[in-house]
Image (cartoon, rainbow, N blue to C red; front, side, top):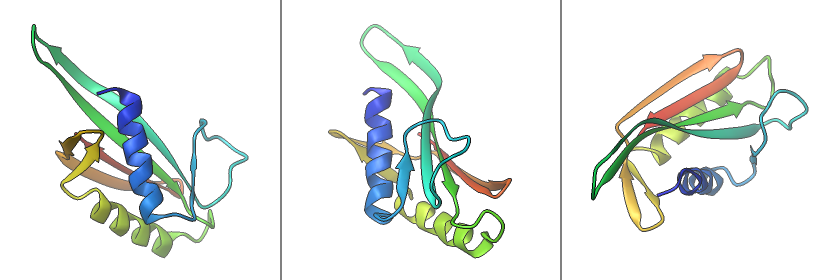
Length: 117
């Protein structure tokens, strides 16, 4: 399974729950629409053997609320919905990936939701 496969699967799940909210594909610094998502997939560790390879990964989902100053309820609702759609597992191609742990926090008005798999 490639990193891009995981990112595409996460993006598709977000798109199905939030069809009217754009998912940014470039690095987000400035000049993007609100509300929007940005998804990042990183490898935490990789253990390869002769016949098996195991990769631990993290998905980081950043949500930029509609209003950068008044966002509390919108962010809470979005977090609830993300927790629901990324509950225990998610499909990637022909596999079902188990989610190990989730975390969420607000940083500078941006919801950061992440999960390990």
